[in-house]
Length: 136
Image (tube, rainbow, N blue to C red; front, side, top):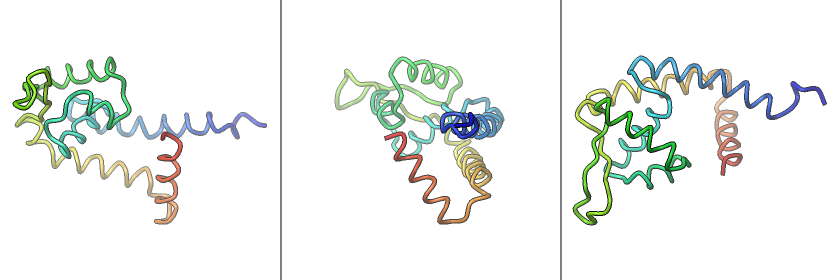
């Protein structure tokens, strides 16, 4: 088999291209792509614990911990003690995050469209389904 036919090579090259586009878009907000994903999760489900965010994004707690600290330092999230269970820290987007929400969502949607622009509708759906099957 030729190295260019190796699925690992193909996926790595596709990842590099997509990640570079998302990195550039996220940098306009002073964020990383993973920080944008965390904010997206919180925009959809405000008040999750770090463990719940980690489950949603399939991230280990040590990686997520650093991401959350940088988001806290950048005034994107705030951690509050849960009223239901004082042992749990709930994570909430800040006013700053909500002020940028529409622009962040637009940037992500625009990049998704850009990445998938060469696919027909059926191909987009099939591609996204295949990616989900691979990582689950």
